[in-house]
Image (cartoon, rainbow, N blue to C red; front, side):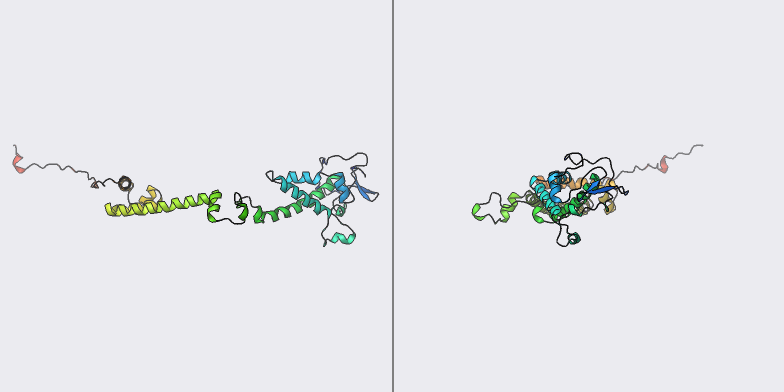
Amino acid sequence: MQSNTAAGENHPVNFPTFSVENRKADPFTIADGRYVGHDGFIVPKDFDEFHERFPQYVRNWVNRHADRFAPKEDLEDWTQDLLIHLQHLPSTSKHREAGKEDIVQTFDPNKHYGASQPRFFNYINLCLGNKFKTLHSARMKNPLCFSGNVSLTTLIDDTDCTQADDEYCHSHSEYLRKRCERQGKQREDRHLIAEFADFVRREDSGMLPAMGAILAAGTSSRAAALLGLPAGRFDLMRIRLRRLGNCFVSGEQVPRRRRPYRRRVKTKAISSPRDCRVTD
């Protein structure tokens, strides 16, 4: 079997500082039915020769381009799928009319501006990349490959491992358990707010607008603006609501509401006419 280059043995694929996007055609020759690049690289005549000379190339390519968290089983499956892709052309491929049977045989140095080592492996990388995108896209559309799937057969009796009731799903799914806890807390909060609203309606119905404004606006400043009240007056209503809430929780008697404080205005006493003395 012939080597990588005309003078040396098989070496790891190591691209030199050469841009494969260079559109200037490189010279190449043909020897014994094989393309030989200007750098001495001998293009494999078919997939069998390619895989014999570079047995780990596709595996290493998958390791570089796959997700680093991908399990080893997936890496092995992708490697085998890509090897099969390189080894067999589709039955409808136009290259079969020319007697070609695999991807390696379809390499044309005239179309890829030469037969050097970078030119050849750039073509192989393009073929692997296109097929890998197709494989990955099909995997992402497969519901069985979703990372968030929950196994329903763990710890189930071996006699009936194909059935799982609602209790089992909720007890073994952290997402369902948290969602149920969140929904339960929301129901309790709504029930508690309804009871407190009835309590405010009985004890001090004048605070209901302030309570509704706080629930709707979320903040005291927005609630005051919603009711059209000055901030100082709304703060008094908020303090009153807090006292009502403490009484609602503790069961104590609600204190009487204080009357609004009015500043007293001192009037100046006017002296009577009797006190007025006329002096000459």
